[in-house]
Amino acid sequence: MNKALRKAIIAGNWKMNKNRKEAAELINALKPIAADKTCGVIICVPFTNLETALSLTEGTNIEVGAENVHFEKSGAFTGEISADMLTEMGVKYVIVGHSERRQYFGETDETVNKRTTAAIEAGMTVILCVGETLAERELGITEEVVAKQVKVALHGLTADQVKNIVIAYEPVWAIGTGKTATAEQAEEVCAFIRATVASLYDQAIANGMTIQYGGSMNEKNCAELLAKENIDGGLIGGASLVAEKFGVLLAEASK
Ligand SMILES: O=C[C@H](O)COP(=O)(O)O
Image (tube, rainbow, N blue to C red; front, side, top):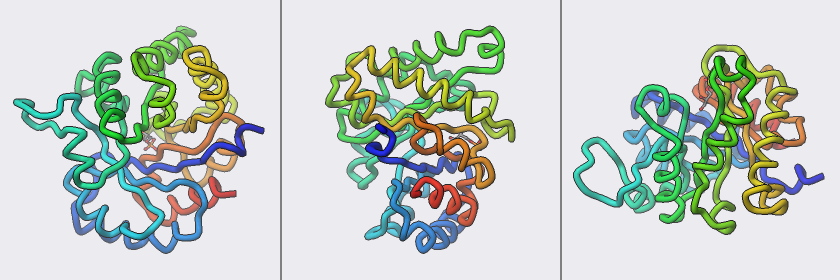
């Protein structure tokens, strides 16, 4: 099956949590837990923790990512961080289009496309987040919403560039709510995302793409979700803040 050919990746999204001391403690606890795992292991941390995370993970199998990136290279954009600033530090991964950015900070499909493009052009790997709200699911327009998010985000990117994109399907109603999509619901939308990518590029590109599920994925429900054909890992919020819990997810994705 194609799933076996794809790399499973578990990425932690720490969101706005952990000061430098707490970050160091969590990473030091995570290192021995992650060491023997074969899945991709990424921790996406606040900008203030990037330096600490990069230095503590040097020589380990833990990769470090940022939680956002601006689309301009430099200039008068107070509070923003460019892709070049991140890559110069050694950061190779970045989350783009997280629903919290869309919901609270006015992120649109168009700015998600610009941020994705800038990060890809700088040589980064992007974890691109898409997902419907509860109202959209109840209206029966999940597929339309997700297809538009994927199509606009990837607009203008070549097939080669898309190889450096991981898509995370995160139904907004499942994020931080303790409400997980059922494995069937998650699989259905992840398969739909793969078909959308195939329609934009080709089946080989779609078959090779890592598609994650995110939204209250934890040590208890991860086995069922990760067993699905089109779910190649997870983007993990709450459960990534506790080394032992994150370790269970890493172990499951490494089977
Ligand atoms: O980026 C991660 C997602 O927003 C999921 O967060 P959560 O696992 O806390 O629900």
